[in-house]
Amino acid sequence: MSRIPFSHVMSAHCESGTLTAMLNHHGLKISEPLVFGISSGIFFGYMKTPMLHFPSVIARIQPGKIRKNFAKRSGIKFITRKYSDPLEAERDLDRLLEQNQPVAVQVDFFYMDYFPSWVRVHINVHFLTVIGKNGDHYIVSDGYHPEIAEISREALRKGRFATGSMAPKGFMYYPVNVPGEIDYREGIRKGIKDTVFYMLKIPMPFLGVKGIRRFADKIVEWPQYARDIEELAHEIFKINVMLEDQGTGGGGFRYIYASFLREAAMLLNVPGLQELSGRMMDIGDGWREISLYSSRMAKNRDLGTEKLKELGNLIRAKADLEYVFFNDLKKIIALL
Amino acid sequence: MSALTLPEIKLELKKLILNTLNMGTVNPETIRDDVPLLSGDNAITIDSIDVIEVVIAIQKRFGVRMDDQNLARHIVNTIDTMAEFVYAQQQKNGIR
Image 1 (cartoon, rainbow over the protein chains, first blue to last red):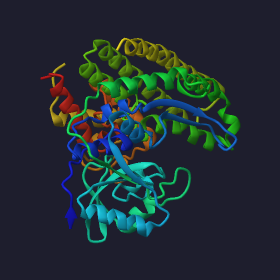
Image 2: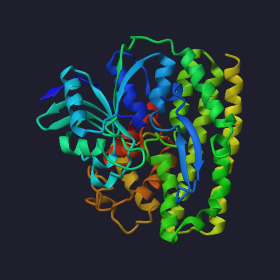
Image 3: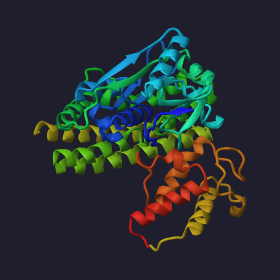
């Protein structure tokens, strides 16, 4: 068995958690919320295109952007690679492990069989770190798992080369030349500035706060997309999954962003950010209530127009709160 | 509010879960502390829809918050993990 000494910690979100653990391993002390905030991880989008059978809702920026944005704002370089040949991907992985280099990989969560079967679903954009080998098994640090785990070569290969939307294609990365210390202040400012732009100013009616409003307005139309009440219930339940279940840290990533603002307040010495952190926690609570409401609707198959309207009203109230919140954040950041 | 002991928290949690999920006919003492509630191997089985009900019920009953630092999905695993979380929060909040 060969295992690289690696500090395993559980994380709120797989992409920011994997990146944080990797940076910590290379000697840079940074928290997951700071990584998430600097990379402008929080977002909102309501998608409905002819390609999509059902509307899709997201509460974070697109997969891969957390690392890219963080790299841009920290100056840290990452070696990244995708593969068409699984054997070549494994050879490179083995070589890097022999050089004591932990490697972050993108996988389909479903094949990560160290999790019990009842929690495994197909999500093609799960991230974890490979930290060693034990015979024909890899040793991995997965932020959603309480401890370091082992996975067979075959299962990891299936995960890394799963097909479908956002297929991993064997994607892997690791950082090079990580400094022991970074002045995060400019990264924090840039991260917040971009978040404010994404949430308030991005000129598309289905993104940012406008996306939350569209979600609120359009939810009453969802029955027309569903084949039957079972499909509608499934899609309504997915609101809860999107807000609470997909490694969001809870409240649709709002809690982790609140933690980021609390840390930013200390690093920038701006008490106003501390106050906004508390407000963002409350907004997270509100999204959690929406999770509960939609879960109950789905479970009870209580999916009539009035219920959908009420769900829309709850979502609209969050849009109102977030509109005021991000405008206040914009005012604070403009002074820095 | 005075602090509850771990066994008291466990019993409270079992009653709370049964009450929240309308499983009032189940004897709380039959629920095992160390077996995941989602696994199908305990006296009650909750599903992923129930998890958010349980999260919010625990937050309201015990005045705690399962945020990004606390990882709700990991906590709502067994009675043991939930009780340890509530107990730790009590200590953190200075409830003795």
